[in-house]
Each structure stands twice: as C-alpha cells, then as structure tokens.
Image (cartoon, rainbow, N blue to C red; front, top):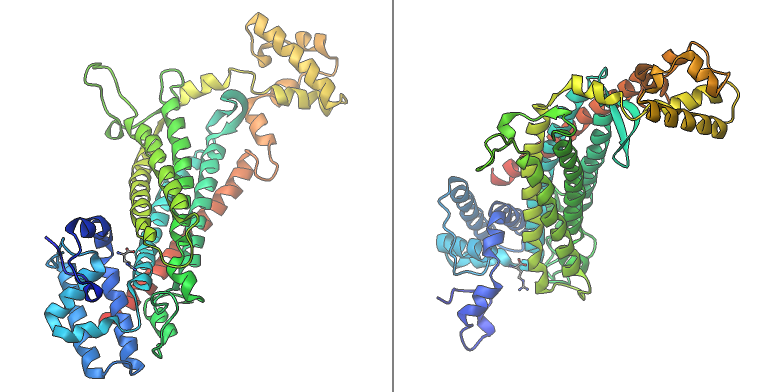
Length: 480
Ligand code: ARG
C-alpha cells in the first residue's frame, strides 16, 4: 500500500510503494517518538510566544501533542507502518486529533533539523544510562581492589613479570573504564546543543527564538550554524567510537577472565549463574558470557566504521545518506549496554582461588628484578646486576629452584655483595611494598588510587543525577 507523505504536493503521479518502503526509517526511528513529541512541544510553544502562529491554534496543537505523548506512554499510540518515518506518523496523528490546524506545527522547521534534534535528545538519555552502567562495573572492580593483600603475578607478553596486588590489577581496569565514562560525558557535553530552528539548511524567515527552544529541551544553547546543524553527525560517530573503545576494554577483560578460569591458570572461578554447559561434555563449565562480550565487540567496531564511511565525502548540507546514522549507533549502544550489565554480574560474583594464585606467584622468578635492584643499590651498575641475576636465574632453572631457595653460600658465589637480608628483600610482599612510586603497586599507592577511583565514582554519580533531573524537569515543564 502506498502511504501518505508530507510532501506529495509537487508530484503528479504516485510514488511507487517500493520507493516508500526503501526510504522508510520507521523501523529505527520509532524509538525517537517521545523525543519527537517533546521537540514539537517546545517548537510550538516558541511559535506561540513569538506570535508566529495565533495563540488559540498553538493551544490546540499543544493539547494534541500532549494527547499523543500520553498515547505513547501508555502504549496506545499506533504506528502506521505505511508512513515514511516517526515524524510523519506523529504529524499525521496530530492532524487526526486536531484537524488541519495541526499543519501549522511544521512552520519554521524541517525534518532535517527535527530528526537531528530528536536523535540528540534520545542519545543524551542513553549516554547517561551507559555511564551509570560503566560505574556499576567500576564499583564491582572497586570491591576487588579492596583485597589489597592478594598478590598475583603481573604479566607482560603473557609471561610472569613482577608481583603485583590484585588491587593494582583491578585498578588498571578501573582507570580504563573511568576514561571511557569521561569520554562519554565529554561527548554528551559536546553534543548538547540544539539544532532545531536550522530548518532545511539555511535557517528561516520567521522570527523564531532558538534560545527559547534550546532551553526548553534542556540543551546548553542553540547550535551556531544552520548548515552544520543539519549535516552534523559527529556526535553520533563519536558515541560509536566511545562505544568501541569501551567494548574493546571489556573485551580485554573478558579475555583475561576466560584465560584465568581455564584449567591452565585456574586463578578464578566464575559463578555458575554466568557460565554455561556443553551439550555433549557433561563436565564442562564454559565462560560463554565472557566470550560473547569479546565477540560482540566486533559488531560494535563495525558500527563505528559504518558511521565513518557513511559521512565521509558528503557534501553540505543534508543528504539522505544521513538517515542511516541511527541504526549503527543505537545497535552499538544497545549491545554495549548488555555487555556492561553482564560483565558487572560476572565481576561482582568472581571467586579467587587464592592457594592456586599463591603457588603460581612462586613461579617464573618474578622477584628477579628486585634481586638485581638489591645488587645495584649495593654498588653494581644496574646493567652488571642484571647480568649477575640472569646467571643466577639460569643456575636456578638447571637446579629446579626458586631464587629464595638458594643458600647464602650459593648467592655469594655469584656476588660477594649478597648478605642475609637478601631473603627479606626478595620476598613477594617486600617486592610489592617497595614499589611505592606514584601509581605503583604498593599498598600505600593502591590505596591512594582507590580513594581517587571512589571519589570519581561519586562525582560521576552526581553529574548523572544532576543531568537527568535537569532533563526530567524540562520534560515536566513542557507537558505542564
Ligand atoms: N526520516 C528522515 C531521517 O531520518 C527524515 C529526514 C527527511 N528529510 C528529507 N529531506 N527527505 O533522516
């Protein structure tokens, strides 16, 4: 069936149904319905205030839009699938309710500025939600970081490197996620400018008040340039990037969890609730959730590439290509949402096999750097010390011993500088506690980091609360 359009006047013949089907964005932009009504309410209130349409017409439209809003909220709003998009649906529903006066709503605006405004409002809410989900994960990691006594092997090149605390390890993930959260919040600030009133591309001849509309919709200010406004998809692309980087961080965590729960590592045990079994091997407990988090990263990165390629080389200003902006970003954020929820559940229910970890800490000579430091502070150059300890390690490998198993006599054969205090010096605990440099793994340093993480977590919680209260207050005002 060929549906009604907002633009049939110029056309002699009917547009083919395949054209409408092909150009429709309804499947995706139906999610913008609430924001579309809010945008229209702000717009019509401004038209009234600026005397662009008569008060009584504006009031009729305002009441009609309020009715549509409650229909959307209660689920009664029926989407007509034969119409091109959600904007068309809402405008036609308005004229169904209030008659031809509804046609005045579109004075001084275009779908070009309307759709980008709707999308920004939608994304603002999603971003605040994503940041609180990142924070839930940070919170779960903070709980792990409080176990400052647990020493694990720290890895480089997936080889045992130096001893670190689980606190230091968890905090490493926390700081990556903190940057993700702040990247999302910065993107939020950057996109929080209102394009409405840019109209098709050049602005409008009507004496509109863009500041009033921007304020009513909770934006910081109107955007500066009408042509930029209708063609800008930086904000959506940036969120696709923020999602990708966060997903990449989750993917690395997932990889680690998968490895650490393998029989080879056996550092951790994931809760049964967040693992799955095998249909053939009865003994299996598989880390499928973590694997899926790792796997879903692929499409999230793919969506970023979709956005970049879609906007590349577009001439100013609006081009219909831009309609393809919503699905990739929405899908990325939706997928990231699910990954964050599941990762928080896995992390908050993890158990550490502390005995296994302790036995693994003893392997791989992870206190060898400290043994070299011991000689260096007693007079050797670090290079000489490095050479001596390398020889000692070779000796230990042949004798199947750890460094701390050597007798003082054996140590002295490699250097006269060794004394009895060497054993305490190279104990794992001392190795950890001596790394007291800013950002290091010592208990003192990790507690500074932890305080920092806890404060930032609280600060972000305040920001999210403030921003969402502000947006909600704008909505309440608009529908009052
Ligand atoms: N459904 C369209 C979108 O999502 C609305 C804009 C249509 N504008 C136009 N000039 N055809 O982008």
